[in-house]
Image 1 (cartoon, rainbow over the protein chains, first blue to last red):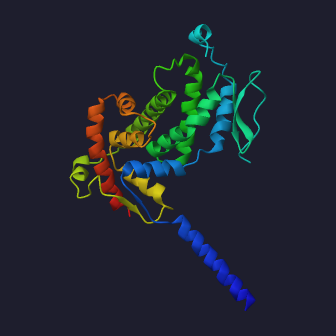
Image 2 (image 1 turned 45 degrees about the vertical axis):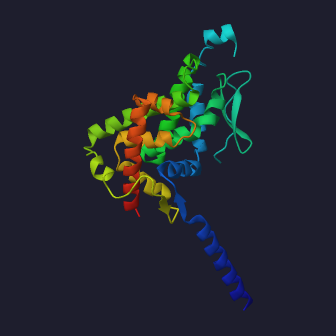
Image 3 (image 1 turned 30 degrees about the vertical axis):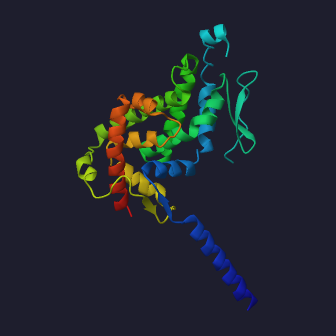
Length: 72
Length: 195
């Protein structure tokens, strides 16, 4: 009996999680929809690692002359 | 483990990009790691939706920032860093797509059909399941012309002004506004069909 209750609770939790991830939404236009999509997108950290490796083989770009002159 | 303390120091005082409190990017150039941190998301998103596949977007984002790294010393701030990176990303994706298109015959979508479709650009877009939203958006964008795709993606970035978008696509701001109206309409019509 206890096991059945636990199982039912678990099923409820899973169903609730599923509902949360599949919530219906309404977007005023494509801009809003794409903004939402962009906000959900995460940048894979692998890119930064690869970039680090690639940049290590390239000499640091020289400091621009105008930065030397005007600072910044 | 994706976050990794990186590499021997390239300069005396490298700037670091952190992931969960651990550095993943240290670059030997003034402010470049900050640039990556501030703009990698929008560049990754643009490349993802223009190229359609995560691994292609990863490669492209890497290449875009590497190009930017090489040119960083020459960047004079005539445009915003954001617009500058978008310019590099757009050119990069354009070149990649051109080489694919020349290898695989791709027929362009007939925009006129969709512009005259019933869906109005001001009707709301209803999404019942956000789980597969990315796929639906990709399918919709793939059905549009390159020009419409780019306009819609750029205008979705609220940080970009119409003038900046116009400069990026090589058209006047008025022309951009006019085309956007049609692009939104075409998007809405295609999107409805992806359910």
